[in-house]
View 1 (tube, rainbow, N blue to C red):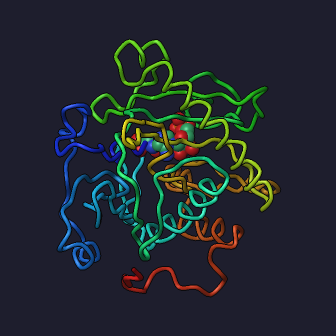
View 2 (cartoon, rainbow, N blue to C red):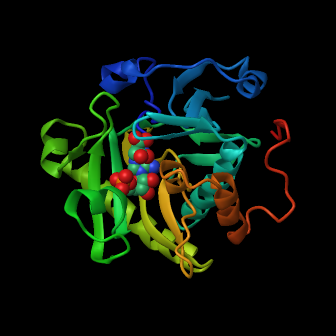
Length: 290
Ligand code: AIR
Ligand code: ASP
């Protein structure tokens, strides 16, 4: 799981409320990252993304890396160009969500690998919504992969690399203060709306949305606080199956050594009309489009 890529919000010391952060090892930045970010202060680094200080208070720059990981980073590879596609797919989804009144941290895309986002205080949970049995649900409960669930199921996982993101219940979440009951209600309402939107979006391009993971944060505006969608939504965080062929168009290609990950992500982007057939993904260097 993408267990530590949450940005830990407002304070300079995320460890104070997000204990797993301190355990995260930071690898040296790649050439690409260096070129783009030698002036900016790095706030946080996770498995798939890096967060830098933004141009204004209350903003951050979210950088999409090419790292592919699975099984709590036991499996790790660099897939040239993955970050570029995920940046675009996530931009597309988040800007649509913003437009239909689902609040997200996304402000705008800055360049091939970066987007400008609102800084939020992350809730240390992975929220998984499932429509079809697959992955952990199938393994854990012995439910046949591909079974359409009688209703969408929401699950919560506590974000902790050290604990390997254990599944938790609402009771744990409220008892340990990771989120209040009201916040959890807001998170679930958001998750259901996002599921409805994404299901239709993908269905329209011949893709079945099997399940996905989101992360939310608290946005403070004066005296007000609201829960908004943060992190990313991409083939790294969703299970996407071709409706006809049941071909996997998501991170399972990497988890299961199926190969063709980049091609599958590109296919998703193409079907959504985000990139066109001949657009280069790999070779181009970063271009600042501010
Ligand atoms: N997910 C969970 N943690 C990180 C991610 N990306 C996503 C998976 C899958 C869904 O959550 O990519 O789409 C459920 O994953 P699992 O492993 O619990 O079956
Ligand atoms: N996303 C989880 C992890 O990286 C599980 C998986 O992807 O296999 O640990």
